[in-house]
Every structure is written in C-alpha cells, then in structure tokens.
Length: 65
Image 1 (tube, helix red, strand yellow):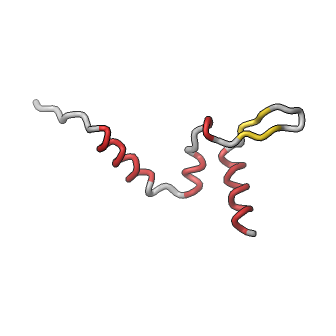
Image 2: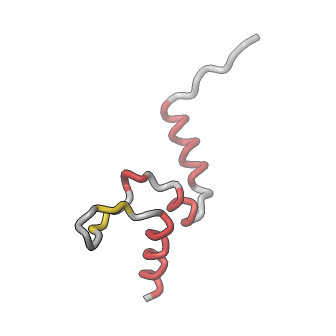
Image 3: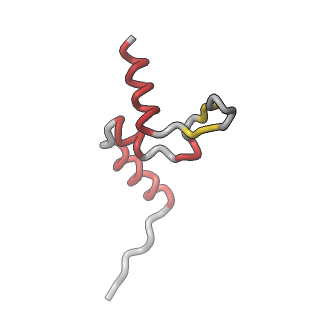
C-alpha cells in the first residue's frame, strides 16, 4: 500500500487560491479573520470588532454612492 507524499507549501497555497477564487464577496466577508476586522470605538470608549455582516453592509452602502 503506497501513500501519497504531503503537498509542498506552494501546492497548498495554489490549492487555497483556487478554492478562494470561487468565493462570493459575502463568503469572503464571512470568512474574514476576526483579528483582521476593523475595530471601532463605541460611545463608551470600548473598542468593538466589526462583524463581517456589518462590514459587508457598510461596504455595499459605500459602493452605491
């Protein structure tokens, strides 16, 4: 019984890009890493992470003007 060798880092990166190329903008936002999302200052000075849904809504509204 023979096993396939592990893919190289370049092969993994290419496979990831191929998968991501089929994502819709909403899918990209849903998968956006929480640590890369924009932060906003709330009225009580707390820093709040913007959810993917809120960010997407803001981006769509900005593209309408």
